[in-house]
Image (cartoon, rainbow, N blue to C red; front, side):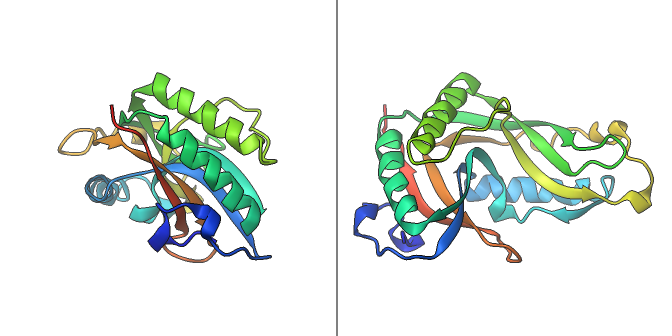
Amino acid sequence: MISPEKATETPSNAQTSSEMYRLFVGIQLPPDIQRELEKWKGSLQKVLPFQKWTHPQDVHVTLSFLGDASAETANALAIELRQLAAATLPLTLHAEGLGVFGPPAAPSILWAGVAGDLDALAALQREVAGACARHGFPAEARAYRPHLTLARRYRTAAGPFSRAALAVGAPSGGWPVWRVEDIVLYRSHLGRQPAYEPLGVFPFREK
């Protein structure tokens, strides 16, 4: 399988394995943005009692969730993702606002919204979903909603959730902005922090 050390090399040379991987394709955040969001999350934890907060290296924008796949399938998909990325121009995104998924009184997910070059992001997501479908991973039926998952499982012992708690405002330096210059094929690991391992990083072309 593609190793993180050789993530930007051609994956066809990687060893194959019968082991199964739980995969998704996403956009990673640069280290400085990870640090900014981590400081902001520290203040959020005081007013938003969720049980599990996302490791800073795991915060990302999902493009396509794949599920279980063999190493051989992952390698084949990686070749197409590399070609797709090489034809894609960089774009700019930024975090903006807070929201939740799940039951109103006890949400399952706390997220930060994503803004910026959303038309380009939507086009990229369609291209990635198409590539994944060609390798046996059907696209999700629900509409694409880009976001950054910050925490999971609201603590019901704190009382019913109030949406008013989401109006905490932006980080002290404003909403973090970053330039997207690649896409990543990730492997998920249960019970590990960070939980997401980059198997392949595929750079965009420059203008």
